[in-house]
Length: 343
Ligand SMILES: C[S@@+](CC[C@H](N)C(=O)[O-])C[C@H]1O[C@@H](n2cnc3c(N)ncnc32)[C@H](O)[C@@H]1O
Image 1 (tube, rainbow, N blue to C red):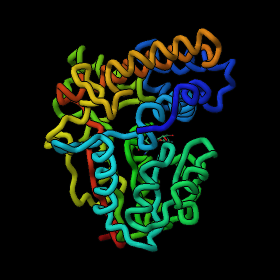
Image 2 (image 1 turned 180 degrees about the vertical axis):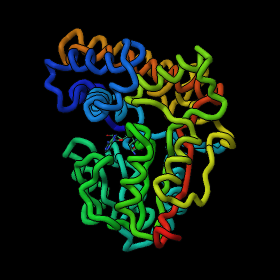
Image 3 (image 1 turned 120 degrees about the vertical axis):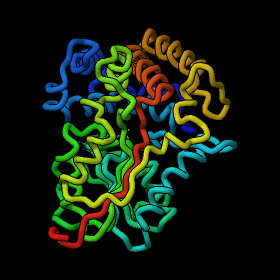
Image 4 (image 1 turned 90 degrees about the vertical axis):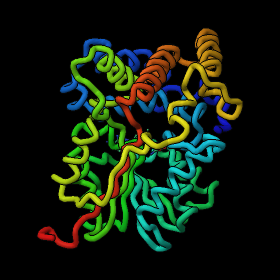
């Protein structure tokens, strides 16, 4: 769990946005979404602005609640949330067959928790692709991986790397932000060396999602506004996009299906945990009131509570989407770039 405290949360809120502009950034962000009359095409054509605003507004909340890894995990009985998150990261490293000396790309790295874990677990050099932010090398230094891991600020839809640069590529709950899965996977295909692997955890609607069901659509819209997403794709759309991009799909599975402990449990109102207290309904209620007070006395910028509100919507949408099995944050696939295009 994060060591970030309430004052870190308040002072980090808004990221690079000027503190006096946080409220207007929240309003602009909200307007992209269905809840406020926004439409999908606008979200997709302005994806950089939407995602940048989202992460500027929420990253300090994520650090406060989740720590350095911003993702869910399937979980075994008796396993802590933290242990399950690390195991989920190790699983990717094992699937990719990472070995010392490999040059690996983390697509959409957040603040780099997974890559530090994967770099230490597999003794590989990880290059991290990040949309914005530049303070993160310090975290790599503290973790002892700064000699082998470094950050590149770029958009994963157009990466500044030559063709066939990497021995492996992975993405953890990040490519769901792409305006178009095919365009994103094609770009990953380009920078991967022939014969090498790409593995990811995708956020997807499952086959149980019914687009004509109003409640399902409400849940989807809650997750989109609460998580900065242009449009959550179906698992089969991701699979199709991978193949279209040229990948051979080795295997794929919604890892939520067999998870003994539900992935959404940490956010479930009926669940209580001391070790992940800040994520629980009571923890979130306390955070909400704390943010309200900090905003009132001027420690947190105006608009902070509104950020907490759309994050609460996200939590509700995620729990309901998970419970109804219409949504998964862990659609896993392992895909290979063939040795030659004709293969
Ligand atoms: C939910 S976070 C996951 C972060 C990290 N993989 C983890 O598990 O901790 C999604 C990340 O994707 C990044 N991202 C979204 N769109 C991006 C883009 N077009 N190019 C590069 N990064 C992007 C965001 O900045 C954010 O860091």
